[in-house]
Length: 108
Image 1 (cartoon, rainbow, N blue to C red):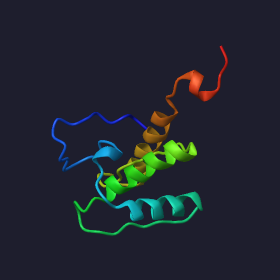
Image 2: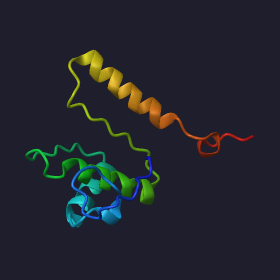
Image 3: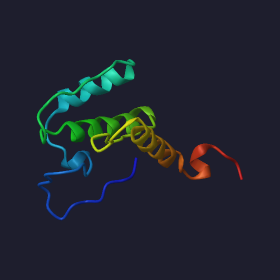
């Protein structure tokens, strides 16, 4: 996951700037992490701007820190068709694979 930049304003209204700026939803984060750790399927339903993305990003942060998970987040809202979706998914996965060789376990 790309480290988030600290915002000038601590009252963040969009995006995920890290767990220190993510308020409440402790039980929801724990429940989502548990479901993902147990290979559960999860669907989040809520109106726009209710914090679904922030909740997912917060859970991803916790899973990455605690369990050594590698996570990939893609926003498919703007995809137009299957090929657009496939391209978006591939770019996200390839972007996550762009890691230093030391982290990948390669020896020099």
